Length: 287
Ligand code: SF4
Image (tube, rainbow, N blue to C red; front, side, top):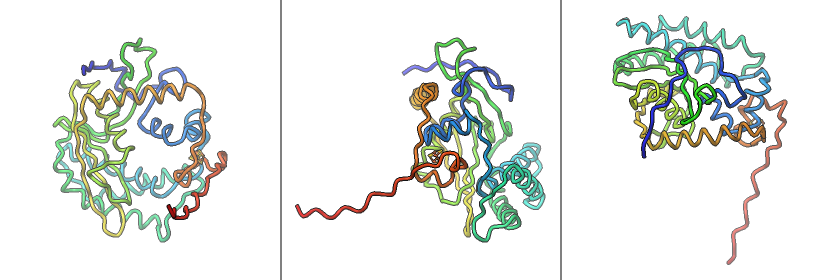
């Protein structure tokens, strides 16, 4: 199987390319559509504001802000302590919180407990971070998605990579309460892995190693890393998956997909999904 490098549209945070909701895609948009087309419509087509969120989402965003500051300093050979980073985390937490009218906290959680939890995780992460030879922090990319199309009309893939390393490699950070299985990553992470590696290859012409660093929250916090190098064959799979998603988005048919993800969906009120009860257990067969 052959593979051609794709044209780079730009490498900036510029305005979106023109066109419909499929003209600029991000891993998050693709994942949202695959999970529930109706949610995609609320979020990216009608742009219904999200009024509610969870403390887990805010924690993840605030950790990213603290990690960005940590890595910028580390790139300049300065190691910041969790104590130095706590105000960055707290400010980001407050800034993100202000965007929502409702925040769902877990029982016993407070702003203070979240800051303390972040400090513990940043302490654990310090030694892991020294493995990375940092080339760039928060690398923004925008690359064409389709081969053989007029580049000005092609959909683009846009995103932001947490760290580029000199290896060459990509490092992404995740906060989670569930300890990930490093043998069988979940589909969302694999999608992100492929999207970022695909963009890196299109930009720099090399396939990078992709590392995920999981900040596992809870009573026994830990840092778990997972590393993989995608193949060209996986890029082809990614491209065909994106093309499929694009054509489904362009069809304008945004059907709801009620299920367990509705519990965490900020659009429950406008959607009002009918979530089917699980079928009753079947009587054991006598035959
Ligand atoms: S509530 Fe459920 S079905 Fe409705 S948009 Fe959200 S995820 Fe989709």
